[in-house]
Image 1 (cartoon, rainbow, N blue to C red):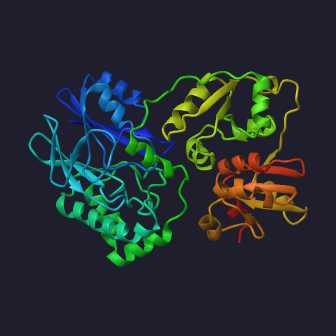
Image 2 (cartoon, rainbow, N blue to C red):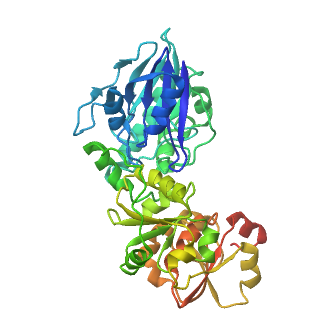
Image 3 (spheres, helix red, strand yellow):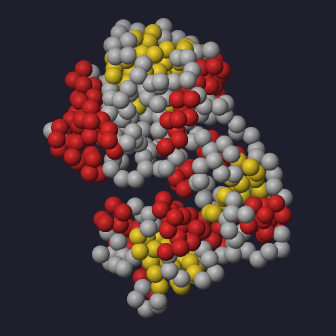
Length: 448
């Protein structure tokens, strides 16, 4: 029996392909199902079952389309009200996949109807458990995605769900969560690339703390999560449209300028230093990296037309795939190639790039403002004295409050600061992007 991990690093999630004897099951598939179909072709297996641990809040599922494409049985918890047919399962049900099977365990907490699937080998021995947003590696799924009025109840439920899994499963069972590899669906950062029930007994706060301490600590530690989460459950319950990964229509330079001047979303995917060196005025710089889809999805005006600028077609297609995973399908065009040619004779805009050592040299000597776009909990932990803290996800609404003059923009690694720099750029501001790790500021002694 083989368990193949399908990483979606940009969202911090995993899907799984379990196979044996020529048949396979998929757990929590992402929307771009071609990756899974390629795997099954490589392995020479046929998918007979697709299982969802819950209705996802951080991505659009590929489960429905995959089930229709390969003719597999689609398995979803009974408590989820959906607009399409599926096999509704409840606690204690068994999903038989021939050489292996899954036992359904109701594990509420991340959502009310959330289930986990215990994988049993042909001998009926539990060898793995697919935990979705319940038991993660060294942590648990967050419990506030259904609204503040449910958080306390769901957090208590999460505690008991994790304890139930630990009580019912032996130490050797491998733990396969969907979230926890960078996803904001994790209550706290997860630990490690692999885990077992024995590891979780030692490390998981739901198993090492008493119930009240666990609940209090989890709730007090919850931070903001991406705004696009509000749309994921709606899409997944209605049934996502088939995915479109084709190249968006090319846009000529005059039309590109018209869209920018009209205030449309025109996003430049190039490296943040390349963007800083020269870009079209009025565009947003979202470097195509592992952070891209989370932060673009967070700031994007949902449903607005979106035009992409990239170095080449591959960059545009990669961005389209990332965006499709969160249901951003309204791509109205694309432009590629030399940015100077795309400017069509208009002057390019640029700004300076520096590091924290450069800020340390100028801090206190020049009239400047430090803009810290990390989340408030990061700022509270350590920050540069006098820095203005506006978390990136609040910046579009608050950018007019940023003063004129020289603005040094930083975050924890440089990515969020690069996005922020493109957002606040205007003629009366001299922007300096601090493209550096915040640990450097700490080492330089310029934090308080």
